[in-house]
Length: 238
Image (cartoon, rainbow, N blue to C red; front, side):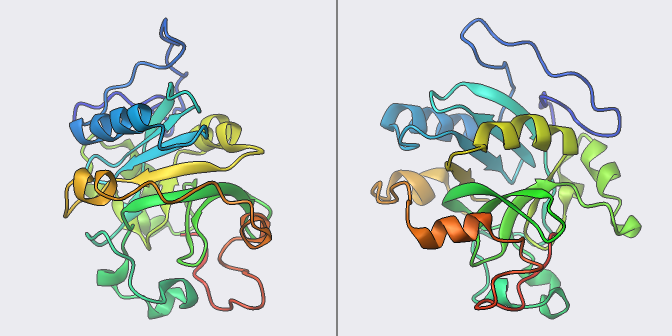
């Protein structure tokens, strides 16, 4: 696929790339990701928050500081099914009730914050109601071959999850968690059936940083496998 991941964190967990003269990391990204990055920086759509771009077509995650400097990038595992819209009520259903066609990583702009799952492990909540998060790769089901999928150069076999975004453990710990610790951030998930302009550029900047108690509660709540009692049945980390 020709993408230089930083860090290309798989089984070997190599070192991070060197910091570029401008303070960021030199990363080769797709034209769509570059287009959205340029738009965010030009419009200040991130509103002074760190942000993250998830490129589903390239199966890549890029992380940026509040000034728009690239801090790192890595391959990602995504929802098994192609599509840009989560099925209605998906976050309130057990995994056994989710069909292969419904295992979608939705496109859009989301306010995200760090939380924990039921085991106390860190995740980045992207859309709590849809039980959508970014987290270290799950390896409990050997048949999924998730580490192997992350290690391949082509993005086609990176579709395996129920919708959540899986990234290398070291990348999550050293880049994602560090960047989003103690703050909210913006996540841009690029579409695969529409253009970035349709999803982002034509929509007024109407999502301001949240400070509501409800969102803070969600951000700090256990992961979807053990949601608040008012929202039973959300899918587990997957």
